[in-house]
Length: 381
Image 1 (cartoon, rainbow, N blue to C red):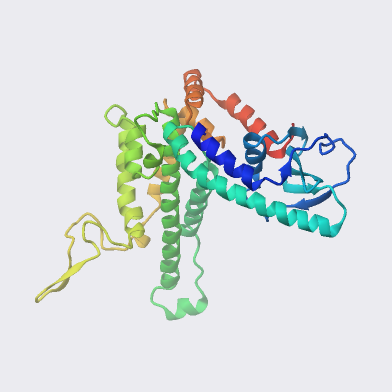
Image 2 (spheres, rainbow, N blue to C red; image 1 turned 120 degrees about the vertical axis):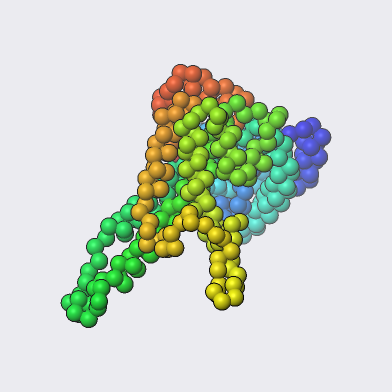
């Protein structure tokens, strides 16, 4: 953080923690025989992960970092003459109070929880402004949600396919009493299939937008001229044109036209309450004739989409996703994205991505990074 911000911040934090003192011995550290009462503060201090920055980085309290497996850090201090420490464990944060007296422990915990929350709330307010500064610099990473978004799309697509080919059972009574036995059941089945297909289209465009935002880190992103936060909320079509040169990449242009058509046909009307720019949802009265649609076109049949749909557009969307994986520019980015890694936008990380793209393979990189992430997440040092 900037110096003036640090000075103001540290003065405020010092006031909040005025009753805390740095320990004079190392008895608080793991490996020392000292009797503590353990109390979980994961629920009572929701932002306890900020305590290292508060106590160690800002106020200089002693910290033992990665002292053992399943422990990220422990910070020692005394309050009212009682030796204490706060510890970040794999499964949450705990206070260790150097007393076995219930009243003393309860009073100490209540006090510490109070000042911890005061400090973290205060710091969170400052960090919101600091985060905006870092975002503008490009010093951020994005949580890769590809797997979850892809699984949602795959689920709706597969269920829609199964529903469309599902056999409709016709009872003997229906066969005897209906002109077209099973017709109603068949129409209901197709309607349900269309609901699932609609879910697949919505899920696909969510997946598409996520991928296109992540692609920016691999495609000459410059935080001096582009603003990531603004880019994220652009229409998907703008993101697509940023990712692909439609004049030089014929296949990218072909898929773009497909995506535009699918979006207008399936996504946009549903997303906007079945209203659209062409006026398809509106009608006017013509004397002697009755109500007429305000949209005159012979582009589509009057037969409802849920009856005539065949799922072919979904197959084309599958083809698009497969095409991305083999694209000359995005083969390596897709390896990283499918591998589940966070995507970083800092200058150093963008250079790493560029080197991997020149090498034309990121499989070993993905394997190594996932191993490191698993070890860190499990606190296996």
